[in-house]
Image 1 (cartoon, one colour):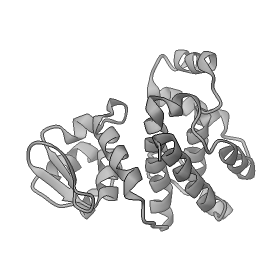
Image 2 (cartoon, rainbow, N blue to C red; image 1 turned 60 degrees about the vertical axis):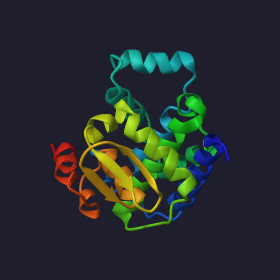
Image 3 (spheres, one colour; image 1 turned 90 degrees about the horizontal axis):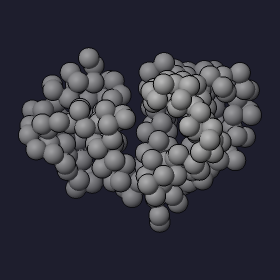
Image 4 (cartoon, rainbow, N blue to C red; image 1 turned 120 degrees about the vertical axis):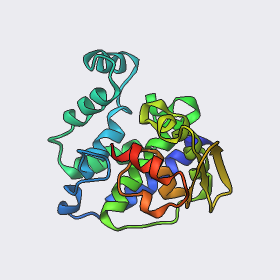
Length: 207
């Protein structure tokens, strides 16, 4: 499967989960700091509706700050009913626009990490296909927009269930999913990992 196809599969699986959520679960704070489950969903579709002109306009309004641009997209959908959010999400299962760039790897990274932002807080674990985890681990570790390169700098990170590793230095090891979420900066995850580099990674996340 191509990266775009993997991203669509990831979004499709998330849409299935979202369809089962109660109103209270939609309002639950996610692992993505400051965002509820509904805000995460709003963020995921907020770029898919933008063409080049409106994308440039959003970044201009945000003074070209990614976090500010993300917040604008979430705010624009803040008052939309969750049933309409889900309908919008289902209409955008295939990444479009910004999330389709670089062969779809941005869309896959965004979908997989945010999917786990939701599943973890709701206590809905799953088995993530290795073919989705491998490219996202590589991307997050190299993506300055999410701080991955800074968090893993001077460390060797090892996904023990994938045979994947990157970097040099004290080791941080564990299953691919918590390793990914830790590299992406999610708090409370590093207890699932081991290795002499763990204090360094934890401090970089919790600072």
